[in-house]
Length: 559
Image 1 (cartoon, rainbow, N blue to C red):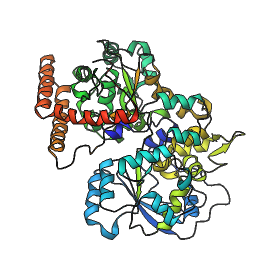
Image 2 (cartoon, rainbow, N blue to C red; image 1 turned 120 degrees about the vertical axis):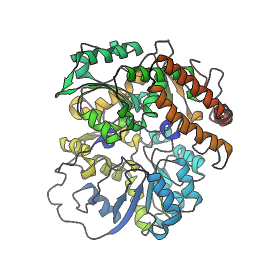
Image 3 (cartoon, rainbow, N blue to C red; image 1 turned 30 degrees about the vertical axis):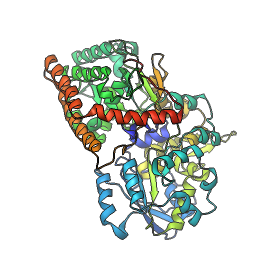
Image 4 (cartoon, one colour; image 1 turned 90 degrees about the horizontal axis):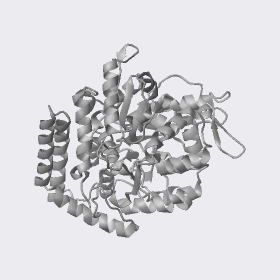
């Protein structure tokens, strides 16, 4: 289990899901009358990120009638974004040893290991020390959620990084959910799952109940293939996997829905690859490949290609990280929830019930040219005023507040949020505060915010299914640097990672059933030869320590 997936936020509202998926670049009317004059010249900062699919406005507007222009007016800053299309972590590692004075002012990353490198290289500030020096009146020194702060300190050795998608018990005391809709989102929604095209489902004469089981779904794929269904003249794609990252969200969901867990029935840590239920997840993909329900090329494409296929309307089912598909922009998408195992194992859902330390982690460089203005920027972007602005846009244009102080998005606001790469509305993911959003928004309806309703319905379908067994995986969130980089364990872990990546692909593309069995058995034998059981014993020590610390007991539900 990779920490970034175990602690990833549930991006289920249009605010976040649209941000993750939109590629629109159309001009929009987000400038109220009387605000057309450009802001005066201000200082520029460089913002680097390793998240290649985060695309904030590449040209920073200083017009005070835009989201970016208002931010500039409040903070005195504009930004140049440096977001490499690929290998961002490699590029940042190179900067650590070569950039000198050209080091970025702000850095947004997702890797805990890379964060620790920044800290050990003394390149970044502790946030509380930075704010005490440059913005001593900052609200963050008084009201930042204590449980989230403690998680960050436990992870990084200090309060170094500002976390995205804050959502914790303390955060919800500050910003209580506005209703059951958001409570359900917190309790049940998950990014990974199966998304079903309702239009194609109906055309094929099928129902969600027909595809709720493993055999039922495979039979539906065959039926659709035999019917030779087309959309706009192009053949329907029965199954779309999550591109080149399929071995994480796609495979992870299949493991969970078929009941695999990273702990056995005795409560000992066990790599999910060794769980018997994982074989069924591999078998499902193998059968889908054998049946021609998805093409091998799907396993090599980038996220843009996945989004394009989803937008075409010819995908019957997508399995993977729903948050990066823009599915919610079309209300014909639905979900069957779990894919029930033909062998009777119970589907499971891991929920970390401890405060998270953020998906994106934003650091301030010690070499920042404008520290006072950066401090004001961080304080503003995390304030209620700032979050209203960058999440929802300009009051009276993109949203209004009702009598209870809840956000009511306008048609323009909904449109501009889908085109965030030019408008800036909902573009600043590193400062997204999930608890704030769930508190400020009334429960949406199809009429007020179709995208949010669609997103919530689909993302919660798995967790709300009566068959699901939810468990607290807080103690199972293993740090990426559990094994020291120069240790034999770290070397074994790397060898296992490289081996399993190649072997899983081979298993899925096996020529026949006999070859599948052979390749699978070879994988298990080779994983043990490479030392996976010894690694699991070390991981178990961490798991048991954290279980005691958090007061959590977890045992395997199926095997």
